[in-house]
Length: 326
Image 1 (tube, helix red, strand yellow):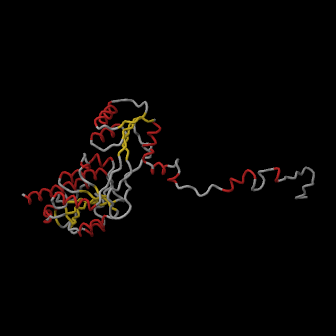
Image 2 (spheres, helix red, strand yellow):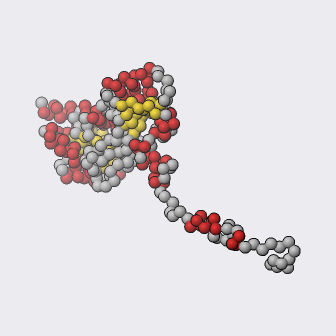
């Protein structure tokens, strides 16, 4: 009979003699739970935790920073890493600012490593020897070849600082704004051209745009140490604030109605806006511009990347300003 514990072979189980029976005994603590699951950035073994702790060896990018307003004075991006023997030597030669140079234990000391050590010594940089596993973790698994260096976070300027810099120089303001330019090498090239042709600074959006990474530093050939870069949350609002301050906002566009060689206001305070090569200026930025200017070219089917276009336009503006001043 089902449920008859007195039948032959039946064994009566007592909860008191079996601590695993029911929900008590050894399973009681397990059923109580451990509370809510910690966030990924709070779990030490998670990749998100390492990214949020640059000093603990996590690799982070330089695309984040200030979150509020149109720009914050002194906002910084996370630290960046340069990995690989050739990349490290080239960055040191280009004057990229470095916090520390890391070399893996038992790494082969070839000419590239010796060059890196020599350049580091000339700049009084600390050289730290770490395990290969630690270097893998620091560079987030990059092919470092036993050599890597840490680039400190870039401190961005406030967009108003660029106008104050123009006042200090006694020359009409000249600011370059980049709209959706995502290649850091283009950013570095624009910074270099800005230094060469008298611009007072460069403005970049916080999102969907290149920031001052090690690649941008290297492309600037040291000019990033002399020309401030401001990062803003809303480029359109920043351009509108420049307009209220008296700047003419000129957007570079292949279909512009005025050639940059014919722009009458080059001797006045000016903000030059450069868009990406593939999409050009975004709609809101284009509508904000006071005038759209073009670079005259013999072949209309050709296009220029942001770095080249900005360099040509800045050269022409500087040439005409110096001619006016003379």
